Length: 282
Ligand SMILES: [Fe+2]
Image 1 (spheres, protein in one colour):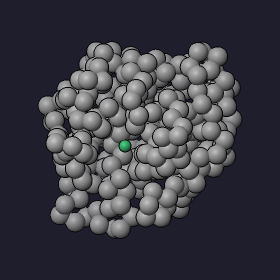
Image 2: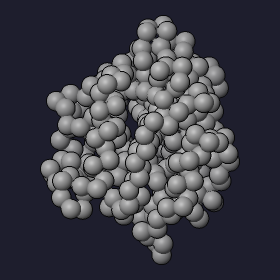
Image 3: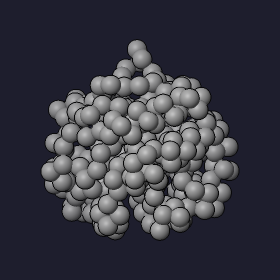
């Protein structure tokens, strides 16, 4: 039987990917951020999961405002890297895991989560930057990936509570997959940031710290944060944090925090990386 062994919460700031691609991670601006990533890479290389489910949002790369799936699962063999305006990032295409993805689709939909199914889809920085942060620059990614998109671009995004319940359903689905896979779940996006308007550049370290603490102390309380509270406290793009709830919901209640890195600024956002392990998988 497959099982979820760990969760990774990871900001997906596009400038972080650009810094990696341009080879400038060691300069004065980026070094303090990247120095915090080494431990996570070593941890993940040692864990050597068999597959990952990456919860992220598309940034008008695969979709536009013409089509906005609330929840979507990618079932393809392979996901090409999206061109986000400057050519595709120079990273490997993402290999999918169709057997696991179709099993998840079936289990989730029969569990009353109405997933959109993507047979073909490019993946953008929302998915590739967390892979780069945690895997470095390999010739091919070390594990297949099931992409799972959440709409956080067009109002109304799903609630944190709904996302958490989706995570619960993912855990149930993984547990009923017949192959003996060790799976990690990424929840990407966040932390506090706002990219436009009068409050552009907003960072709320106190909110971010409380949110990180809450991931282990009381994740259910975090699911009650309303969209208005996210907007007010974490900025307009802080709503991306609902995707962390999918990851948290997929883990055991007593999952343990094993690593945390928080840094401001990364571009004009607060960036975090947090690792949680299921105690049952240790
Ligand atoms: Fe994003």
